[in-house]
Length: 195
Image (cartoon, rainbow, N blue to C red; front, side, top):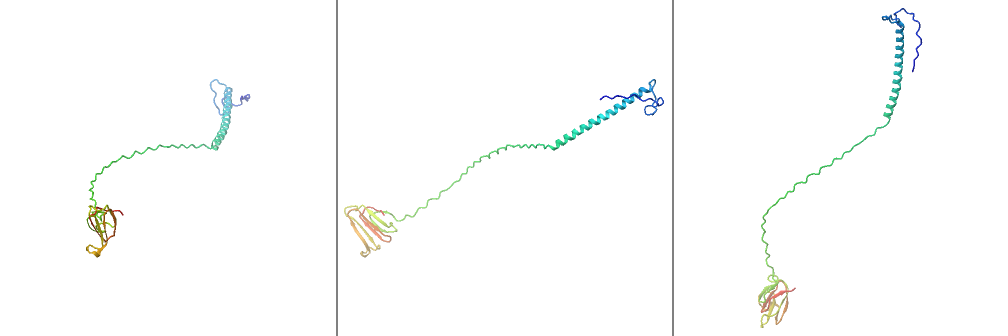
């Protein structure tokens, strides 16, 4: 921008009065006219400076307002960072071994009272259910040539009336014995229960 200065007006003030009639003294040998020029150029320059700064500040502040408004209008992204910490494995529990020594004294086995026999000799008298078990018995026969005699009786009296049944064997034989009866045997081989 170029400024043209109009020609200075005629000076009607007394010498040394200054441009505004303030009475500024003139320096030694400087004419009043050159001072006026300098003040005029300075005033124009000062006004131009204020105008320029005002325009620059005005246009800059408008841009700043627009930029600030734009910045506030746009949403800002939110960043979330998740850190996963690795858990330390717990130390295994120590192994504890305990040895216990215990002395156990075994109780003796109870021996059963022997019950009635299921095998008996071919010589004797037996109470069925107490001495021998009830059931069917078998013998291989006589021990010698004299034969094998057996008898079932109601009691041990030896009387003829107490005999239920009897027999003389020359070979093998069988007999069924009931509980409470008496069984007599002479000259026979061993009797064995078979049922």
